[in-house]
Image 1 (cartoon, rainbow, N blue to C red):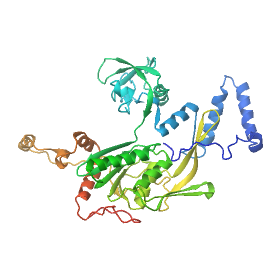
Image 2: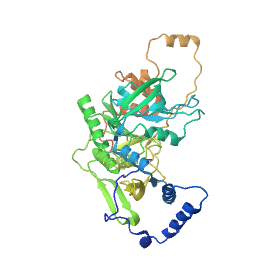
Image 3: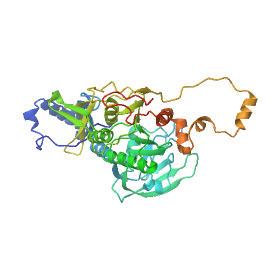
Image 4: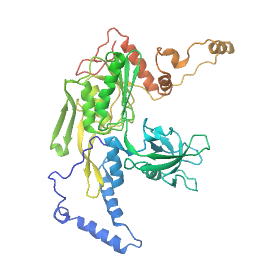
Length: 445
């Protein structure tokens, strides 16, 4: 789970940590325990591993969101948040259940990356990576730790090479590739222009360029339609969060006034209030924001702000429920802390911790199954020979791309949101902002 606020900083006064004996006398016990383990324990023990284990245990007693990260993991998380790193442009995912051998597969392939240009496809099995077999002779499933270790081999300084052997799905052929790492930008925003002038913008996580990418998507929709969209679908499902300031900036795109979020630090020592600004606001059209259990942290800040101001109707399932802010704190050896430093509250004063956001329109992830009588043989024959569009295709307007129709088949929430948006867009009495400010949104009549 990504943190809401990821801002690396040193101690407030910029100095090094004060002497342990001056500030924390109980560290004497820790130092004594460490000494005993180093010199008396039956096996050799690495001092750094012992210290890291102590820090990990200490942080785990705080809350479920704080964490200690070793240097390699800390660096990778920072790269993920920045959204740009040296790599070949894909991630590794576990093999499908029952696959033998259980080779990891290409996942999250980035268009235009070195891997994509070399012809790799999502689902290709990675047999060897950087001179190592990905699956040992035992053929056991890869552990999460092993998968993470292999994935780390894909990253490195731009201009360096990594060799790998891949095998297409259901094919015994093995292709060898030598890829040169580049600075790869992970896209966080996807957009689609759908008829009749319905915009779709999906935000996958909040990284350093997310707000700019979101505004670029809105500009792209305006250029495609020759006007602003009639209705916007804002998809925040499966979004684990990310940068706090990016969440504020995205919400500010759609709000012209009022509080976006309030952040309260330890014991209320400081209160930070983020407010919307009128310049640059995208208004004049209603919004349907999609949320689910995977919508957390920064995604919840955006969804709650739009809901509290009546700027959007939320569709889907209750969100994760994370109402705290984490800050990255650099440690001397390259490791780091992700530490909970504040709590946040929505414009209406709600805390989402453990509760999440309730959608205005609850829609399950999968379409309810309908049991109908079996058609007669003649009816089946007439249907199959009619040449008419069937299923979802028959209910959709012309101009919806085939790949989007396929998504509608597989994504019930997305289909319901689109059908709702179509009904709103054809309503003559549609309220352009979805509702008056300061009240919960109601769908256009």
